[in-house]
Image (cartoon, rainbow, N blue to C red; front, side, top):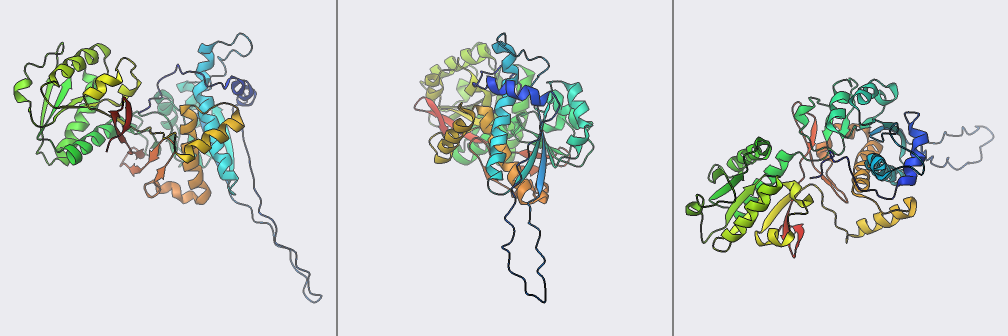
Length: 414
């Protein structure tokens, strides 16, 4: 899972693009129109008694997309004095914009027409609220953004037009935004918990699972849906043992563990000290007991969790990101992207491409397709889309992949 809350991102070499975008975005929007007209019908010489009426050329419908991203141009220092710190604030936006635009250009080449309006949310709830009342935004066929939860809340609570609002990068639970027009692209944490529970019940079929807690209440965001999922999918035949582990002490759990069957440990913690201490102790336990671990999706970002340790514990991690860099489609995309932007695509550029291609294709095919996202499955370069409609909180992508450490790297679990 990739959280959009990280505001300090490595630069992708797009500094020149930030400068170029500044002039466009300071005016609040940057339209891009790529009309493609089909050739007019071939002229047929008229008969003398009945002059031919020349047919009008057929032009594909132009779909308008409002793209709201945190460029923060008011705070951006342009010129030789520009620092990595303030340039990094715009880097996420630039990466995503380039990937999204690249997708629309690809669809335009196939005959679709788009008008892309780009707005700077300035990473501000106040600015996002103002954009909710902007006539150009309200009359667009689709709104993509804002990115961060504060901006989404401010925008969605003031946006009354009957248009979908795509949350492109935040995995925040859609319930907190209270909008039935929202499209949550990045699966929230609860769907990672369900994916782990489904994998455990379908593949491993244990009699019991152990949930190891550090004591922080934030872990309940994973534990509660996992417990519900394991009870539902396992038909309450799987015993769930939940306990707080202090200083890596497993003495109380050892009598309940099996020496012949896999002992499944769910560890939803993200605290560094707890994880290092607990996993090292669990590695010692694994010398005498079969151990399989399922961790929080953010573990893949933690450099202090060494692949060798995680592999020894047969660690599984869920993710909504899964790029196969050897796939021909990925190779072609990277090659073509570098040809256009003279820099390799960052993670957000790839996400922008997937989302731009998915929603742009739906708009180009039929505007009514946006009302039936559950009918439009998509396997992208980075993300897979499989949406469900919730009663009050709009559409949510639930596609999550389970990975396992093999050969000291994460690979899709079989």
